[in-house]
Image 1 (cartoon, rainbow, N blue to C red):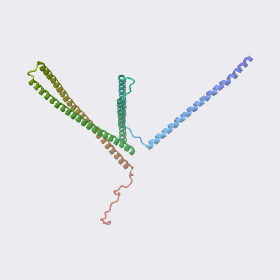
Image 2: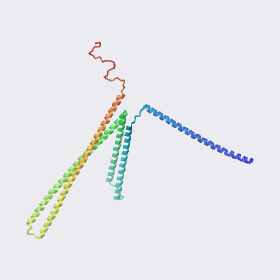
Image 3: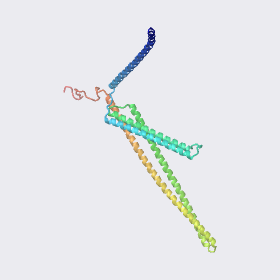
Image 4: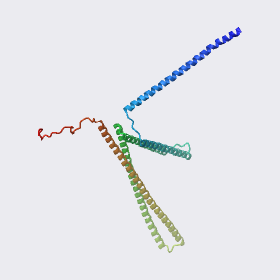
Length: 347
C-alpha cells in the first residue's frame, strides 16, 4: 500500500504543474479578451461622443434646410431620370459596339485573312468613335446643367444664396455652349448653301449637255432624211438589191431614233427626280434650322433667367448684409421737424 501511495503521490506531483500551467494560460487569454473588449467599447464611446459633438456644432453653426414631400418627390424623379439616361447611353454604346463587331466579321468573311483593313474603314470607324464621344459629352453637359438648376431652385426655395464663383462658372459654361451651338448653326447653313449651289450647277451642266446632244441628233436626222430623199429620187432605175439596202438602212435609222428618244425620256425623268430630291433635302434642312433656332431661343431664355436670378440673389444678399440700425440717406429723423431756410425760427 505504501508503494501504491507513493506512486499515486508521484503521479499527482507530476500532473499538478501541468494543470496549473493550463489554468494560468486560460486566465491570461480571458484577461486579454476582456482588455480588448474594454478598449473597443472605449473607442466606440469616444467616437459616439465626438460624433454627437460634431452634430451639435453643425446644428449650432448651420441650420439644415427643411425638405418637403414635393422636394423629395422631385429628387426621386431626378434620380430616376438620370438612371434612365444612363441605361439609354449604355444601350446605345452596346448597340454601336455590336454593329462595329458585325461589320468587322462580315468584312473578315468577305475578304481574305491576310489582307489588312483599308484606310476608308479606319476613317469610318474613327468618325463613329468621334460621334459617340460627342454624344457622351453632350449628355454629361446636360446632366450637369440639370443638377445645377435643381440645386439653385432648392436653395432659392430655402432662402439661401449660391456662391458668386459658382454662378460665374455656370454662366461661362452656358455661354460656351451657346457659342458652340451658334457655330453649328452657321456650319449647317454653309453646308446647305454649298450643297444647293453644287446641285444647281450639276443640273445646269447636265441640261446643257442634253440640249447639245438633242441638237446634234436633230442635225443627224435631217442629214439622213435628205440622203434618203436623194436615194429615193435617183433609185428608180436601180436593182432590187439597192432597194433592200435602203430599206434596211431606214430600219436601222428608225431604231436609232427610237433609242435616242428613249434616252431623252430617261434623262427627263432623272432631272425630275433630282429636282424632287433636292426640294425634299431643302425642306429637311429648313426644319433642322428651325429646330436649332428653337434650341437657341430656349438656351437664351435659360441664360436670361439665370442672370436675373443671380442679380436678385446679389441684391438680397446685399440687403441682408446692411445693418438695420444704420441711418439711411435722405431720411428724416423721428421726433424732429425740418426747418426751412425761408421761415424764421420764432414765427
